[in-house]
Image 1 (cartoon, helix red, strand yellow):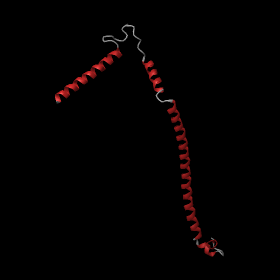
Image 2 (cartoon, helix red, strand yellow):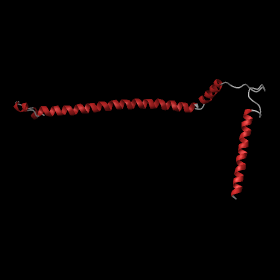
Image 3 (cartoon, one colour):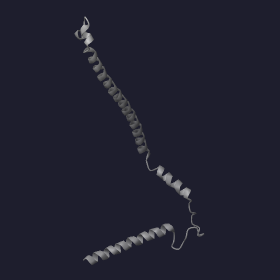
Image 4 (cartoon, one colour):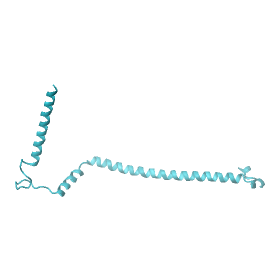
Length: 128
């Protein structure tokens, strides 16, 4: 049973290899034919021509609808980035103002608890 399975796998593999060989030979021309031997086939393309064709094909990979979607996404992400940068600036201002508030509260408490205030006819603690 196992021998039959192995034999069938070998036949299938050799069939695939033969098919691949025929495809490659068909793409390269007839066996024994070398490119540029004067057989009248189409001339070989230069590297620059092949690269130009490649990049032309690559420029059409993304369709116009997808390109528009990506453009809209890019614009909206840029807008969102500006919004986040503005919020970051506002948070920085908030933290700075909170620090000033703490400092001013400490100064106010220091001034109100000063001994000089007791000597005044109307101390500031009675007004507040």
